[in-house]
View 1 (tube, one colour):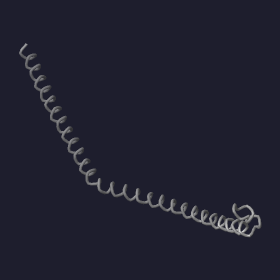
View 2: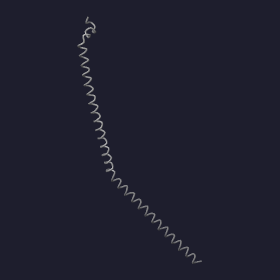
View 3: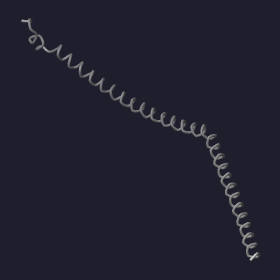
View 4: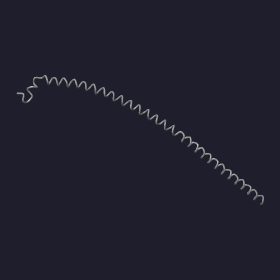
Length: 113
């Protein structure tokens, strides 16, 4: 019986050592994962200015493209309006001269009789 008890005590001691080793290994793995996560966070924090600058650069490029497109549209519309104004100016001058030259103008005015 003493031999059986001794084997059980030895088995329990081995099991305790295995459990302690597993606990130590678990703690080592957890600490390693935490250290890796901190290192990744530090790398990310260091990259934030670079990421921000990249975002700003891309936003500035898009803004410049949008401004160029709006300016192009504005210039096209300005040319169209200028041409239309010149056409209407000629039409208005012709109509004004026609009214001034027309003999009916004198008769249509009140008090000219």
